[in-house]
Each structure stands twice: as structure tokens, then as C-alpha cells.
Length: 171
Image (cartoon, rainbow, N blue to C red; front, top):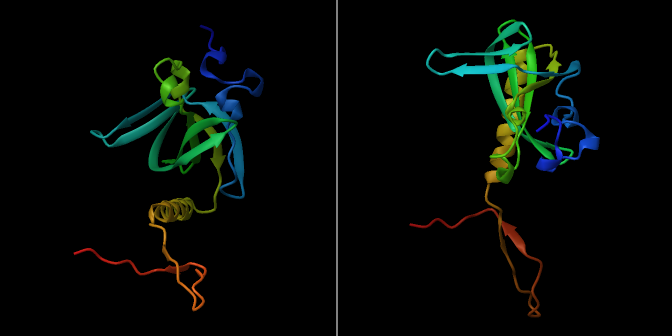
């Protein structure tokens, strides 16, 4: 099978490869779009090291932040923000095939690529701000909806439901 035969995986070839189709909103004011394939991404919990190889360059990773999945042009992508020991801040992504397509997906579907290099004034502040924002979004999604009760007016008609923030505790 040719590497560019996307029809088997439900990808419209006219839109381009998954790397070309991926795009994100801005994280910081200064960004450089790279769209460069990562040859290898090595993570070792035993040695406590992580690095990526791109071409002849090896970038040792010092900090990682997993971002929520993104959907671009009908494809789902896993995103990861990494900071190298040199201080470079890179947005990595990879196409995440649908569950039913994973067994037959080509090898390149699981390869990471560098979408863009971020040039924030302060990397630590960027990581903490993004981590807080995504944690708040996850907390909002996990919070239970408010309890809604209907009240009856003196005429016997149902009034608009009133939301209450109190939750009865079970003992």
C-alpha cells in the first residue's frame, strides 16, 4: 500500500495528509508553524528521561503538558506541549484514528509531528496558565448539573422551575 493512500481510512485526499490538515488556535503572540515529522519520541520512566529526534537533532524534554484532543477537518488529534532543555517550547500532535480503524491504520498514523514552536515571554507561566485552564474546563465538565424543582402558584399553575444549589446528602 502506498503511504499516501488515505481512502482506506476514510480520509479525503483532496484535503491533504493529517499533518497538513491539523491547525490550532494561537497559544501565544509569537508562534512559528513548523509541520515537521518527529523521527522518534523516546520516553523512559526507568531512566527518567525523554527526548525527540528530528533529523540530526536530538531534543531532550524537560517538561510535558498533555492537552485535550483536537478535531480538525474531521480527524481527531492528540496534542502535547513540551519544553526542551534548551528552552524551546514545541506543540506536538499526532493523528488518533477512530477505534475501528486502529488495527489497520498505517504506521505513520501513530507518529508525532511538531505543529509549531511557541515563543512565549515566560515558558513556566505559559505551562501553569494552560494547565489551570484545562483543569478548570475538566472540573466544569465533571460538575453535576444544578437540581431543578418546579413550584406551583396560588392559581394551581406550574411556575418556572427554580434552580437550587443545595444537594440533599444521603446517610
